[in-house]
Length: 549
Image 1 (cartoon, rainbow, N blue to C red):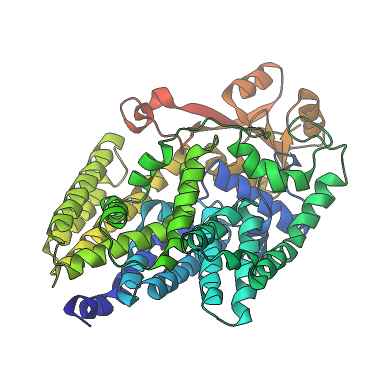
Image 2 (cartoon, rainbow, N blue to C red; image 1 turned 180 degrees about the vertical axis):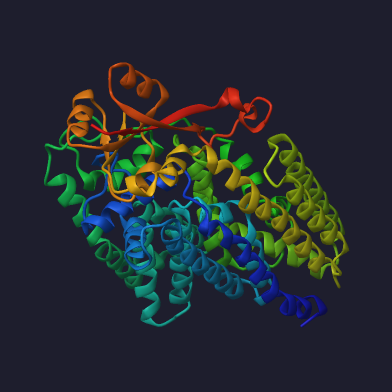
């Protein structure tokens, strides 16, 4: 064991602990609209009604994502109550599982030092952290895919049958999180590896086919739920149509339909989208990732064909997403464990060759640029407690340069973690709390007086998943004037609506006390909103009407 390995073994647990702690503050922040709050509302309804088969959103049957994350969130609500922390906790725990399998995969395909570096890289990669705060499917997918592939590696190496069962279980959970297409990510690397090494007999291997069969047995709860909610009820209107099959949507339209743009949910793809997305989403390690990919293509002499299981999985997934007609930045997070391993291997190879000087300099440049961007945003936004934010950022910036490191690899990782500290302290302690005052739904629920919190609540001609989630009980979704009249006629109530609709109702004679809240779509930030001098021009108003009669 050389000096670099010894040093890494010593500081690894402390940096890992710091990385995990940097993720923790996001657990207590509100749930952000639209997707996170929408998914939380779906899980809330499951928990309230104890209906674990049907998914509902916006007052109607909902067919988009499979059930697994909603089941976990609803179970967490049953244990911890219906709140932000309970919704985010299952995703955070699965993220910890993905850290564990990132370590195991890198350890078994490379060595312990690469595994430690990969773990540290993955723990603070930007969109990995954001996925724990703005919870969707990705923390679950990352864990399930990494877990399935690692257990398949152990099975391939002659491991016990428990690896077969666990691989099938993880693959099933991945399918029940995102759909059938995840099998391409899980199996694609194996197909390439077997093809490159001419292991054609593996394609007929009994254990692999048994694993696939067992995976489909494990997803029977998902299939039954879809069948019961949709296939047994062809009269239901979904996507503006009747005779919609939940099973067909699961096996085709939910992912492959989006890929080929033939399903009910369509998009417009860009071949370069995930290239430039990865460059910011993998901060502060983007330069290392680009270098790692280049190193593998041109210079890697330590050929271990089994590593093509993760290289192939990453490559196929990246190409598949790039060719897809429906693209969102968070999709790429599911292969961040393997991005981290590729980056870590590059770091380790440079460290053992004594060639980390250029990387140290580049990480310092990234550190300074991101710190400067944070300081610029503090000024542009005119953040509350801005002076404190400037002071903390400055201390971290200076500390990142002054902290003592005994070798270049340690310096690279220390600078990366100082960069992460600047980013996540700024985001979770200052920036996101500022943004949430413009998420009108959750803010208006918070402002409801105690004596009115038990009143029936509804939204009228607008959607606010955060209002629906944070309301003490279920919220009626009213789309027509007749529905509103019937709702009001039942007695005192609260109605969330737009400024235009609220003013219209008051002019029409509805007697109401009005609470107003500035509103902005805070996941679609624009310069006019961020600039405190022009922010008022970018804001809308939302009304909460207290209707007595």
